[in-house]
Length: 215
Image (cartoon, rainbow, N blue to C red; front, side):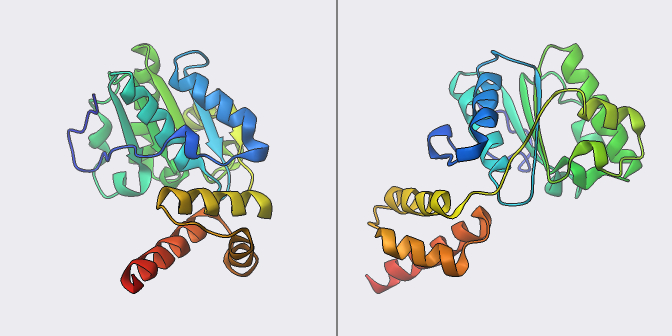
C-alpha cells in the first residue's frame, strides 16, 4: 500500500526493468537487495544529476509497495518548501527514500530533522535509501553527527552512461511509447544532444509530443 499523507510524497513510478546502468551494476544489485530487505538497512547513492539515482530510489520504493509494505518517497527539493517538522512522524514507515539530501546542507533546522529521522528509522527497524549529488564525506554539513550517519552505510557512486548506454536508454524509452526508434536516429540524438538522462528524457518527451501532433 502506498502511504501518501501529503501531496508532496508522490508515487514512485519507476521500475528496475527500465534502469540502464552498465557500469553501475553493483549499485543496481545493492538497491534491489535493499528493496527486498535482504541487505544493509541503509544505502546511499551519489553522483551528478541525470545518472539514475532518482530512478533507482523510485524503483526500489515501487518494489516495496508491490510487496504491500508502507513506503515513502521524499524529494528534498520539495521538502525544503515545507517546515522541517514535516518529517517528524515518518520514522515508523518501513521504507523511505530521500532524494537530493545534500540540498539540506548548511540548513540547521533541516540537518537536525534529518538526523532525527535517520535515528528514528534505525531504531524502528526501518530501511533508508538516500541519494546525493555530492559525496557525503565532502558535503558542507554543519551537523557533524548527520554527516557521520550519512557516511556510515553502504555507499555507491553512480557514473554517467556512455554513448552506447544512452542509445539503449532512448530506444527502450521509445519502445515503451510504441515508437520504433532506429539505431542511427538514436545515435544522432545522443551525439548532438545527449548529456545526461534528464536531458535525453526531456528531449524524447518533446519528440514524442511532436510525433503525436503530426499523427
